[in-house]
Length: 166
Image (tube, rainbow, N blue to C red; front, side):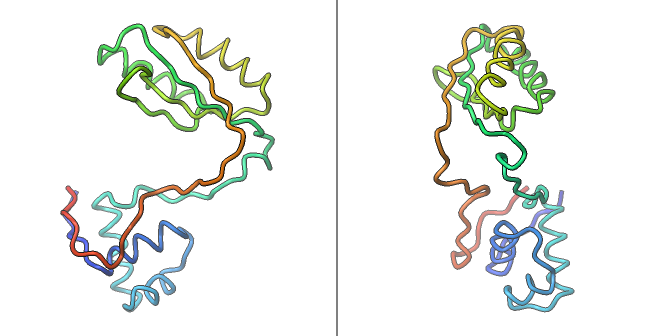
């Protein structure tokens, strides 16, 4: 992975791609104040350096019948590295788990789980999650509504140079 030192143009490109990953290279270049060929080279360099991990569409869960989102706080019986990795690998095979975060503190993992309804989540909980090896406890928190969903990170386009990324 090559090193890229971010300048104002790179930060503008990242901010615009994060806001709209389908933006054309011509529009991206126009917003960044450069021509299309160097813009495309910069995008490729940012991708190769690992700043851009991928592109995706934001899908409305309710439109596909996923009307319930639950945050499951999962505690394990053992926090040995092999057991933590085993749980992470197991979770990768569960499509209803959309996010998995290992935490410091009382809870070992926080899972974001989508389901068609509460009964669907309970089936997942009892047949998969609590039935999995090494599970100590699970506390479920049902999301009532989402008032902010903003993927990515805040990018200050006008700030000075940022540290190099390896």
